[in-house]
Length: 299
Picture 1 (cartoon, rainbow, N blue to C red):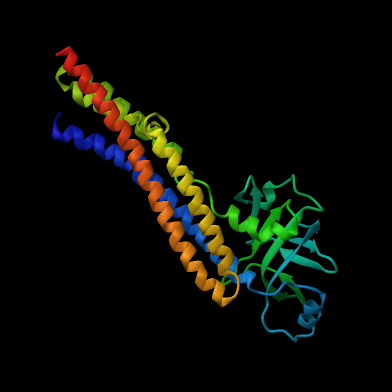
Picture 2: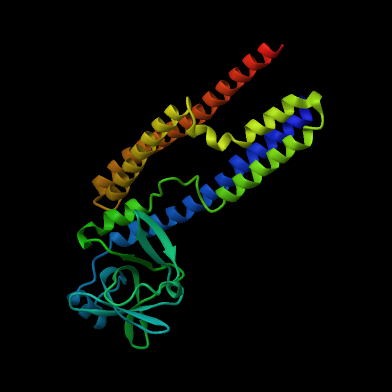
């Protein structure tokens, strides 16, 4: 095998199966990190009730960051009204991002794409109450964008569900990954087909074909055993991360305990990644051993 051919295959492999999906991981994790930071900030703020609302109306309260939950009462082109136990609070739709908890994952949605959500849909709002036209409304500001979550759970379990849902199960599988893998597999197969016309380069052809199917290696024996261990460790990492997030929104002493769980989550996640690499490596070794036996027998 020529060095140039090996570098070409390795370049396609690293970029399409590694760099591009990892860029998607970084983008997704950045947005989720920003979301959780905003969530932790507002969850430490008081819940908006009738007495607090009256003090706000009379100018007796300076801090305008609050959280509120209720049901959608009515909507207009620019506003949405949320009805709580004894309050009806307007919410400005402009620049407001909506999230929906679906199958324990947090999905960002556009209000205009939500014809299925109507009155009586449960909604959680956290952010700033601003003064507009002589009244207080929830509105996104440059400093404090609103957190608006549509949900169908009990209110008592809402915060843990939001935090849990914001920890996606597998960040590697993101919007970039399927396209990147398809392009990489096609490029590697095309490379192998191109070199088929040169019998002396059979090793290059074999390497390109094997490399094209590397994304499947974690799910094939014997490497699948490491993949099972990786999934277990990833679940442990998610559980530790959720625990850390829950502690981080509480009292100062508990927030210090959150650091332990954050570290624990990082260790579990790193171990999970090592197991994936070992799964791929085990199957590459397995395929290489079978190929060498076949070549030896042919010889």
